[in-house]
Image (cartoon, rainbow, N blue to C red):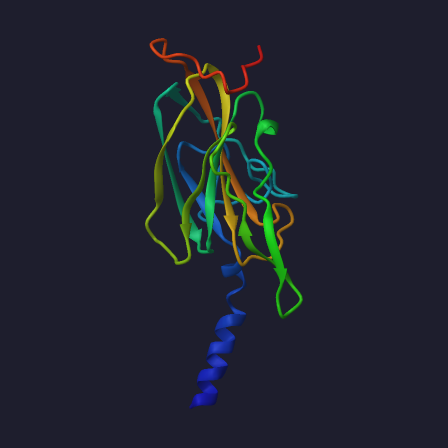
Length: 203
C-alpha cells in the first residue's frame, strides 16, 4: 500500500511542471494585450509576449486624472511565491526600468533558480510601487491596490505590472519576471502643481 502511495505521489510531481511557471492576469486597468485564461503571453519584458508570440493588442486606453489614485487589480492564475512591482513610462515602454535584480542559487539538481528579487525602497520614478503582494502561499483572491498617479499630462503612458518569482528557474524570455502593461491617458489636475520628477511628454 505504501509503495502504491509513493508511486502516486511521484506521478503527481511528474504532472506538475506547469506549477513552476507562475502566471497572472491584469484585471485593472485594461491590459494592452489580449490575455488567455492564464494571462499569457506575458514572459517578455517589458510588456508581455514571448519570443514567438508578440501578442494581439486590445487598443484599450484608460483615462486617468493626474494626481489621483489608480486602482490596480491582478489575479494570479498559477501560484508561485514572489512579489509585484508597478511602474509608469511617459513616452515609451523603453523608459520602464529593468526587471528586478535577482539573487540566485544552483539547486541540488544543478538548476539555476531565483532566491529573491531586489525591491526599490523608497521608490523613485518611473517606479510607482514595489514589493507588493509579497506572498508564499496560493491565493484565489485577486491582489488589489490603489497607487498614486503623478500629476502630469500624457496621451499614452505605459503602466507596467511586473511579477518577480522566487524559487523559479530561468525563463526565456523574461528570466524570473512576468509582465503586463496598460495604456493610460493622463490629464493633469489644473488645481494641483505638476509633478516635475517625471519625464516630460515628447510632442
